[in-house]
Figure 1: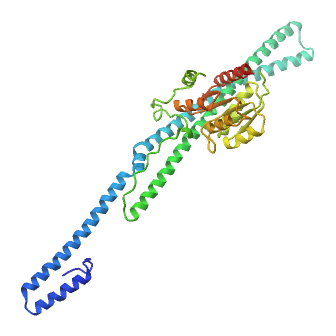
Figure 2: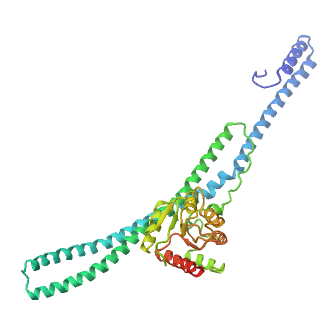
Figure 3: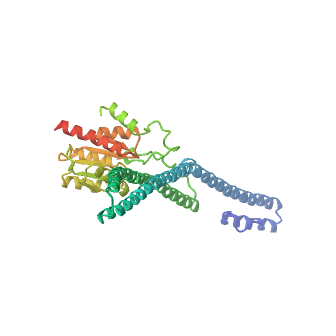
Length: 252
Length: 130
Protein backbone atom coordinates (compact mmCIF):
# COMPACT_ATOMS: atom_id res chain seq x y z
CA UNK A 1 0.00 0.00 0.00
CA UNK A 2 2.71 2.45 0.90
CA UNK A 3 5.82 2.46 -1.21
CA UNK A 4 8.93 1.65 0.79
CA UNK A 5 10.73 4.60 -0.66
CA UNK A 6 8.12 7.10 0.43
CA UNK A 7 9.89 8.78 3.29
CA UNK A 8 7.18 8.56 5.87
CA UNK A 9 8.73 8.36 9.28
CA UNK A 10 9.26 4.61 9.60
CA UNK A 11 8.30 4.30 13.25
CA UNK A 12 5.00 6.14 12.73
CA UNK A 13 4.25 4.02 9.74
CA UNK A 14 5.01 0.65 11.41
CA UNK A 15 2.95 1.63 14.44
CA UNK A 16 0.01 2.56 12.22
CA UNK A 17 0.16 -0.72 10.28
CA UNK A 18 0.34 -2.80 13.48
CA UNK A 19 -2.65 -0.96 14.90
CA UNK A 20 -4.51 -1.34 11.60
CA UNK A 21 -3.99 -5.12 11.42
CA UNK A 22 -5.15 -5.50 15.02
CA UNK A 23 -8.31 -3.53 14.38
CA UNK A 24 -9.01 -5.57 11.21
CA UNK A 25 -8.47 -8.86 13.05
CA UNK A 26 -10.80 -7.71 15.81
CA UNK A 27 -13.39 -6.68 13.21
CA UNK A 28 -13.18 -3.10 14.40
CA UNK A 29 -13.91 -1.51 11.02
CA UNK A 30 -14.46 2.08 12.19
CA UNK A 31 -11.09 2.18 13.93
CA UNK A 32 -9.43 0.53 10.90
CA UNK A 33 -10.85 3.29 8.65
CA UNK A 34 -9.50 5.94 10.98
CA UNK A 35 -6.03 4.39 10.85
CA UNK A 36 -6.17 4.19 7.06
CA UNK A 37 -6.98 7.91 6.91
CA UNK A 38 -4.06 8.58 9.22
CA UNK A 39 -1.71 6.62 6.96
CA UNK A 40 -2.96 8.51 3.90
CA UNK A 41 -2.37 11.83 5.71
CA UNK A 42 1.13 10.79 6.71
CA UNK A 43 1.92 10.04 3.13
CA UNK A 44 0.33 13.24 1.84
CA UNK A 45 2.23 15.49 4.21
CA UNK A 46 5.47 13.79 3.29
CA UNK A 47 4.77 14.40 -0.41
CA UNK A 48 4.01 18.03 0.24
CA UNK A 49 7.20 18.37 2.19
CA UNK A 50 9.19 16.97 -0.71
CA UNK A 51 7.36 19.15 -3.21
CA UNK A 52 7.96 22.17 -1.03
CA UNK A 53 11.65 21.38 -0.85
CA UNK A 54 11.88 20.98 -4.62
CA UNK A 55 10.04 24.26 -5.16
CA UNK A 56 12.37 26.07 -2.84
CA UNK A 57 15.44 24.64 -4.56
CA UNK A 58 14.05 25.56 -7.94
CA UNK A 59 13.31 29.07 -6.77
CA UNK A 60 16.80 29.45 -5.30
CA UNK A 61 18.39 28.15 -8.46
CA UNK A 62 16.46 30.62 -10.58
CA UNK A 63 17.34 33.46 -8.24
CA UNK A 64 21.01 32.67 -8.05
CA UNK A 65 21.10 32.50 -11.81
CA UNK A 66 19.35 35.82 -12.14
CA UNK A 67 21.38 37.38 -9.37
CA UNK A 68 24.72 36.45 -10.84
CA UNK A 69 25.19 39.88 -12.35
CA UNK A 70 28.62 38.95 -13.51
CA UNK A 71 27.36 36.32 -15.93
CA UNK A 72 24.50 38.55 -17.03
CA UNK A 73 26.90 41.39 -17.72
CA UNK A 74 29.13 39.08 -19.73
CA UNK A 75 26.24 38.25 -22.01
CA UNK A 76 24.81 41.75 -22.27
CA UNK A 77 27.84 43.98 -22.32
CA UNK A 78 31.27 42.44 -22.02
CA UNK A 79 31.05 40.05 -24.92
CA UNK A 80 29.64 42.51 -27.44
CA UNK A 81 32.35 44.92 -26.22
CA UNK A 82 35.02 42.27 -26.61
CA UNK A 83 33.80 41.64 -30.14
CA UNK A 84 34.10 45.36 -30.94
CA UNK A 85 37.55 45.44 -29.36
CA UNK A 86 38.78 42.54 -31.43
CA UNK A 87 37.28 44.07 -34.58
CA UNK A 88 39.18 47.24 -33.78
CA UNK A 89 42.35 45.17 -33.49
CA UNK A 90 41.69 43.75 -36.96
CA UNK A 91 41.15 47.26 -38.33
CA UNK A 92 44.31 48.62 -36.71
CA UNK A 93 46.51 45.77 -37.89
CA UNK A 94 45.09 46.15 -41.41
CA UNK A 95 45.77 49.89 -41.40
CA UNK A 96 49.30 49.32 -40.19
CA UNK A 97 50.00 46.70 -42.84
CA UNK A 98 48.57 49.10 -45.40
CA UNK A 99 50.76 52.00 -44.31
CA UNK A 100 53.88 49.83 -44.30
CA UNK A 101 53.13 48.34 -47.73
CA UNK A 102 52.36 51.75 -49.24
CA UNK A 103 55.64 53.15 -47.94
CA UNK A 104 57.57 50.13 -49.23
CA UNK A 105 55.88 50.26 -52.64
CA UNK A 106 56.66 53.94 -52.93
CA UNK A 107 60.31 53.34 -52.02
CA UNK A 108 61.02 50.57 -54.54
CA UNK A 109 60.93 52.79 -57.68
CA UNK A 110 63.21 55.32 -55.94
CA UNK A 111 65.76 52.57 -55.27
CA UNK A 112 65.40 51.32 -58.86
CA UNK A 113 66.04 54.75 -60.36
CA UNK A 114 69.06 55.40 -58.11
CA UNK A 115 70.45 51.99 -59.00
CA UNK A 116 69.92 52.44 -62.78
CA UNK A 117 71.31 55.95 -62.92
CA UNK A 118 74.33 54.96 -60.82
CA UNK A 119 75.14 52.02 -63.07
CA UNK A 120 74.80 54.12 -66.26
CA UNK A 121 76.98 56.86 -64.82
CA UNK A 122 79.49 54.24 -63.72
CA UNK A 123 79.73 52.96 -67.33
CA UNK A 124 80.27 56.45 -68.70
CA UNK A 125 82.73 57.30 -65.95
CA UNK A 126 84.79 54.24 -66.89
CA UNK A 127 84.79 55.38 -70.53
CA UNK A 128 86.02 58.77 -69.37
CA UNK A 129 88.77 57.11 -67.27
CA UNK A 130 89.87 55.16 -70.32
CA UNK A 131 89.98 58.51 -72.18
CA UNK A 132 87.36 57.31 -74.66
CA UNK A 133 85.21 60.41 -74.18
CA UNK A 134 85.12 63.59 -76.22
CA UNK A 135 85.07 66.98 -74.50
CA UNK A 136 81.45 67.52 -75.61
CA UNK A 137 80.41 64.15 -74.15
CA UNK A 138 82.20 64.91 -70.91
CA UNK A 139 80.36 68.22 -70.54
CA UNK A 140 77.06 66.33 -70.83
CA UNK A 141 78.28 63.66 -68.34
CA UNK A 142 79.37 66.30 -65.87
CA UNK A 143 75.89 67.93 -66.00
CA UNK A 144 74.27 64.53 -65.50
CA UNK A 145 76.47 63.74 -62.49
CA UNK A 146 75.51 67.08 -60.94
CA UNK A 147 71.82 66.22 -61.35
CA UNK A 148 72.40 62.76 -59.91
CA UNK A 149 73.99 64.20 -56.75
CA UNK A 150 70.98 66.43 -56.26
CA UNK A 151 68.52 63.62 -56.88
CA UNK A 152 70.40 61.22 -54.59
CA UNK A 153 70.08 63.75 -51.78
CA UNK A 154 66.37 64.30 -52.19
CA UNK A 155 65.66 60.60 -52.80
CA UNK A 156 67.50 59.69 -49.59
CA UNK A 157 65.35 62.16 -47.67
CA UNK A 158 62.26 60.68 -49.31
CA UNK A 159 63.37 57.15 -48.40
CA UNK A 160 64.05 58.17 -44.83
CA UNK A 161 60.53 59.58 -44.66
CA UNK A 162 59.11 56.30 -45.92
CA UNK A 163 61.18 54.29 -43.45
CA UNK A 164 59.91 56.53 -40.66
CA UNK A 165 56.38 55.86 -41.88
CA UNK A 166 57.02 52.08 -41.69
CA UNK A 167 58.38 52.53 -38.18
CA UNK A 168 55.47 54.64 -36.97
CA UNK A 169 53.02 52.14 -38.46
CA UNK A 170 54.28 49.63 -35.88
CA UNK A 171 52.62 51.57 -33.07
CA UNK A 172 49.62 49.30 -33.55
CA UNK A 173 51.44 46.51 -31.69
CA UNK A 174 51.36 48.35 -28.38
CA UNK A 175 47.76 49.50 -28.78
CA UNK A 176 46.32 46.20 -30.03
CA UNK A 177 48.40 44.40 -27.39
CA UNK A 178 46.68 46.37 -24.64
CA UNK A 179 43.25 45.69 -26.16
CA UNK A 180 43.91 41.96 -26.50
CA UNK A 181 45.17 41.78 -22.90
CA UNK A 182 41.82 43.19 -21.82
CA UNK A 183 39.91 40.58 -23.79
CA UNK A 184 42.09 37.83 -22.26
CA UNK A 185 41.16 39.15 -18.80
CA UNK A 186 37.51 38.97 -19.82
CA UNK A 187 37.88 35.35 -20.97
CA UNK A 188 39.57 34.52 -17.64
CA UNK A 189 36.70 36.15 -15.71
CA UNK A 190 34.16 34.28 -17.84
CA UNK A 191 35.93 31.01 -17.15
CA UNK A 192 35.87 31.53 -13.39
CA UNK A 193 32.21 32.59 -13.63
CA UNK A 194 31.35 29.35 -15.41
CA UNK A 195 33.35 27.30 -12.91
CA UNK A 196 31.36 28.99 -10.11
CA UNK A 197 28.13 28.18 -11.90
CA UNK A 198 29.09 24.52 -12.22
CA UNK A 199 30.05 24.40 -8.56
CA UNK A 200 26.76 26.05 -7.67
CA UNK A 201 24.60 23.63 -9.64
CA UNK A 202 26.59 20.61 -8.46
CA UNK A 203 26.10 21.38 -4.79
CA UNK A 204 23.02 22.19 -2.80
CA UNK A 205 21.68 25.19 -4.58
CA UNK A 206 21.98 28.29 -2.54
CA UNK A 207 21.42 31.94 -3.13
CA UNK A 208 24.52 33.73 -4.29
CA UNK A 209 25.63 37.21 -3.53
CA UNK A 210 25.21 39.37 -6.60
CA UNK A 211 28.58 39.94 -8.20
CA UNK A 212 29.85 43.38 -7.39
CA UNK A 213 29.94 45.62 -10.37
CA UNK A 214 33.55 46.08 -11.31
CA UNK A 215 34.29 49.76 -11.38
CA UNK A 216 37.08 50.65 -13.73
CA UNK A 217 40.07 51.76 -11.75
CA UNK A 218 41.31 54.70 -13.74
CA UNK A 219 44.60 54.81 -11.90
CA UNK A 220 45.35 51.34 -13.17
CA UNK A 221 44.93 52.45 -16.76
CA UNK A 222 42.28 50.99 -19.03
CA UNK A 223 44.05 50.81 -22.36
CA UNK A 224 43.24 52.45 -25.67
CA UNK A 225 39.80 53.82 -26.45
CA UNK A 226 37.97 51.54 -28.87
CA UNK A 227 35.57 53.17 -31.34
CA UNK A 228 31.99 52.11 -30.74
CA UNK A 229 32.81 50.84 -27.23
CA UNK A 230 34.41 53.58 -25.14
CA UNK A 231 34.40 56.66 -27.30
CA UNK A 232 30.80 57.62 -26.54
CA UNK A 233 31.64 58.35 -22.89
CA UNK A 234 31.71 62.09 -22.13
CA UNK A 235 35.02 61.88 -20.26
CA UNK A 236 37.02 60.68 -23.26
CA UNK A 237 39.20 63.17 -25.11
CA UNK A 238 39.18 62.80 -28.86
CA UNK A 239 42.88 63.32 -29.47
CA UNK A 240 46.04 65.28 -28.80
CA UNK A 241 44.38 68.67 -29.45
CA UNK A 242 41.84 68.09 -26.71
CA UNK A 243 44.56 66.90 -24.34
CA UNK A 244 46.47 70.10 -25.02
CA UNK A 245 43.34 72.21 -24.48
CA UNK A 246 42.57 70.46 -21.22
CA UNK A 247 46.12 70.86 -19.94
CA UNK A 248 46.30 74.51 -20.94
CA UNK A 249 43.02 75.11 -19.08
CA UNK A 250 44.86 73.71 -16.05
CA UNK A 251 47.62 76.26 -16.52
CA UNK A 252 50.03 74.16 -18.56
CA UNK B 1 69.82 72.57 -26.37
CA UNK B 2 72.06 69.73 -25.17
CA UNK B 3 71.48 66.68 -27.36
CA UNK B 4 73.54 64.51 -25.01
CA UNK B 5 70.95 64.52 -22.25
CA UNK B 6 70.20 61.06 -20.88
CA UNK B 7 66.64 59.90 -21.49
CA UNK B 8 64.85 56.90 -19.97
CA UNK B 9 62.05 55.41 -22.10
CA UNK B 10 59.56 53.29 -20.11
CA UNK B 11 56.93 51.17 -21.86
CA UNK B 12 55.92 47.53 -21.44
CA UNK B 13 55.76 47.02 -25.22
CA UNK B 14 59.20 46.76 -26.79
CA UNK B 15 57.90 47.94 -30.17
CA UNK B 16 56.77 51.21 -28.64
CA UNK B 17 60.10 51.64 -26.85
CA UNK B 18 61.90 51.11 -30.15
CA UNK B 19 59.64 53.60 -31.94
CA UNK B 20 60.22 56.26 -29.29
CA UNK B 21 63.98 55.59 -29.24
CA UNK B 22 64.14 55.85 -33.03
CA UNK B 23 62.17 59.08 -33.02
CA UNK B 24 64.46 60.48 -30.34
CA UNK B 25 67.51 59.44 -32.37
CA UNK B 26 65.98 61.17 -35.38
CA UNK B 27 65.74 64.32 -33.27
CA UNK B 28 69.41 63.95 -32.34
CA UNK B 29 69.07 62.32 -28.92
CA UNK B 30 71.23 59.22 -28.83
CA UNK B 31 71.75 58.82 -25.10
CA UNK B 32 68.71 56.72 -24.21
CA UNK B 33 67.96 53.73 -21.99
CA UNK B 34 64.86 51.53 -21.67
CA UNK B 35 62.77 50.00 -18.89
CA UNK B 36 59.62 47.92 -19.22
CA UNK B 37 57.69 49.18 -16.21
CA UNK B 38 57.87 51.47 -13.18
CA UNK B 39 59.42 48.84 -10.93
CA UNK B 40 62.48 48.48 -13.18
CA UNK B 41 62.53 52.17 -14.10
CA UNK B 42 62.63 53.63 -10.59
CA UNK B 43 65.91 52.03 -9.47
CA UNK B 44 67.47 53.00 -12.81
CA UNK B 45 66.38 56.60 -12.29
CA UNK B 46 67.69 56.58 -8.73
CA UNK B 47 71.01 55.05 -9.79
CA UNK B 48 71.65 56.85 -13.10
CA UNK B 49 71.92 60.49 -13.98
CA UNK B 50 68.87 60.76 -16.22
CA UNK B 51 67.72 64.15 -17.43
CA UNK B 52 64.32 63.21 -18.83
CA UNK B 53 61.75 60.45 -18.32
CA UNK B 54 59.38 59.37 -21.10
CA UNK B 55 56.81 56.90 -19.75
CA UNK B 56 53.70 54.96 -20.67
CA UNK B 57 50.80 54.79 -18.19
CA UNK B 58 49.28 51.31 -18.46
CA UNK B 59 51.98 48.80 -17.50
CA UNK B 60 52.12 45.69 -15.33
CA UNK B 61 54.04 45.99 -12.08
CA UNK B 62 54.22 49.71 -11.46
CA UNK B 63 52.01 51.98 -13.54
CA UNK B 64 53.37 55.13 -15.17
CA UNK B 65 51.26 57.38 -12.95
CA UNK B 66 52.73 55.73 -9.84
CA UNK B 67 56.21 56.07 -11.29
CA UNK B 68 55.55 59.78 -11.85
CA UNK B 69 54.38 60.15 -8.23
CA UNK B 70 57.42 58.22 -6.98
CA UNK B 71 59.72 60.48 -9.01
CA UNK B 72 58.09 63.62 -7.61
CA UNK B 73 58.32 62.20 -4.08
CA UNK B 74 62.05 61.50 -4.37
CA UNK B 75 64.02 64.67 -3.52
CA UNK B 76 66.83 63.68 -5.89
CA UNK B 77 64.46 63.16 -8.84
CA UNK B 78 61.66 65.58 -8.02
CA UNK B 79 62.67 68.14 -10.64
CA UNK B 80 63.18 65.70 -13.51
CA UNK B 81 60.88 66.50 -16.45
CA UNK B 82 58.44 63.68 -17.19
CA UNK B 83 56.68 63.20 -20.52
CA UNK B 84 53.79 60.77 -20.55
CA UNK B 85 53.10 58.90 -23.80
CA UNK B 86 49.99 56.81 -23.33
CA UNK B 87 46.77 55.44 -24.78
CA UNK B 88 44.90 56.60 -21.66
CA UNK B 89 42.64 59.41 -22.77
CA UNK B 90 40.05 59.98 -20.08
CA UNK B 91 39.88 63.55 -18.80
CA UNK B 92 40.17 62.42 -15.16
CA UNK B 93 43.40 60.65 -16.02
CA UNK B 94 44.92 63.66 -17.75
CA UNK B 95 43.93 65.84 -14.79
CA UNK B 96 45.40 63.23 -12.44
CA UNK B 97 48.69 63.25 -14.36
CA UNK B 98 48.73 67.06 -14.33
CA UNK B 99 48.14 67.08 -10.57
CA UNK B 100 50.95 64.58 -10.11
CA UNK B 101 53.24 67.01 -11.92
CA UNK B 102 53.59 65.68 -15.45
CA UNK B 103 55.42 67.99 -17.89
CA UNK B 104 53.79 66.79 -21.08
CA UNK B 105 51.05 64.37 -22.08
CA UNK B 106 50.92 62.67 -25.49
CA UNK B 107 48.11 60.30 -26.48
CA UNK B 108 48.82 57.30 -28.66
CA UNK B 109 48.82 56.93 -31.57
CA UNK B 110 51.03 60.00 -31.96
CA UNK B 111 53.21 61.52 -34.65
CA UNK B 112 56.89 62.39 -34.72
CA UNK B 113 55.88 66.06 -34.94
CA UNK B 114 53.86 65.83 -31.71
CA UNK B 115 56.78 64.25 -29.86
CA UNK B 116 59.12 66.97 -31.10
CA UNK B 117 56.68 69.73 -30.15
CA UNK B 118 56.21 68.43 -26.58
CA UNK B 119 59.94 67.87 -26.11
CA UNK B 120 60.73 71.38 -27.36
CA UNK B 121 58.23 72.78 -24.88
CA UNK B 122 59.78 70.83 -22.02
CA UNK B 123 63.31 71.96 -22.97
CA UNK B 124 62.22 75.58 -23.29
CA UNK B 125 60.91 75.48 -19.73
CA UNK B 126 63.99 73.64 -18.49
CA UNK B 127 66.18 76.40 -19.91
CA UNK B 128 63.93 79.17 -18.63
CA UNK B 129 64.11 77.77 -15.11
CA UNK B 130 67.92 77.46 -15.14
